[in-house]
Image (cartoon, rainbow, N blue to C red; front, top):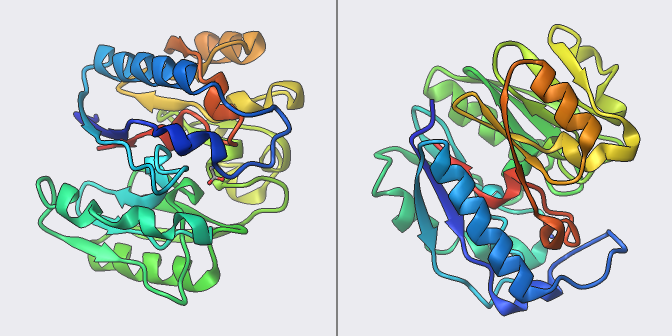
Length: 253
Ligand code: GLY
């Protein structure tokens, strides 16, 4: 169960965030409204939401998931692979020290963005991507081992982050799309397939047996509802324009 989430309000500079999507610039006012609705959705699942101030220096800083990995034993501050995002970790130690005694770091030459890390109980799947390298993954696995946790690497071919294409929904259920549907590491799970035309909906989040899904993906909605979850749709169209999904917008712990 999660009890808390950390989010960061987007700054007006978010319209200049990194993107590979050709969906145009985000509408900042709409993004703010959607961010507030996202916070409400987390609260409605029983979470206390800690909202960090906007950080205009870093356009992508609203995607707070990438800068830390929070486990039930320790927190790990990452070293983002995107050079323009590296400074986003500033202040995270201070924020996290209110909740964690043990805080570790990923250090250069290691690179890691926690959008590449999927927690399944005490095991953490780590995507090797354009943002996360082997050294970052090795450091993370060493940190996890120190606290009785474990990790393994998954090579990515098509997606930005591991959790762009998979989401663990507890109860052995794995939402998966594209390259992950047949990935050998994931065949032990009950795969809930997401069609390629709805690939954005593979980035959902489980919060205490509710599943937050992006608005506008009817097949994904049906698949997840039929699996027995309470589903909450949240419109995150403006964050999608920056390759950001529901998981990227919070740290849940
Ligand atoms: N715009 C989010 C990212 O590329 O990291």
